Length: 91
Image 1: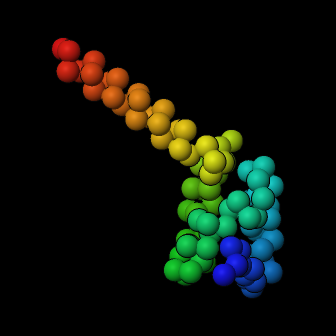
Image 2: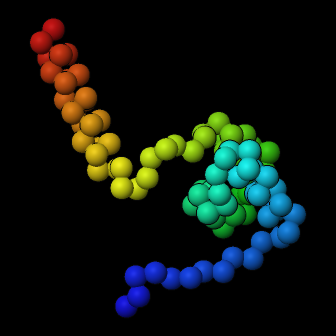
């Protein structure tokens, strides 16, 4: 079985142009916007609530982290939480 699949997505030209502008504003690519946008679009939410979605996208700028960073970040957060729990237990 193939480890990758190709998907073609067709969206209205006007929406595509708006998404391109949003990606440019955020300094990212359309591909990086797609996970959240696909969920919203699938639900029909995007067209009904475009202004709110744009506001949310702007308020959550892209992070410098990649998927490969996740295990390390999880370990760091767990270590910090354990240390905080230990400090609280001492008091």
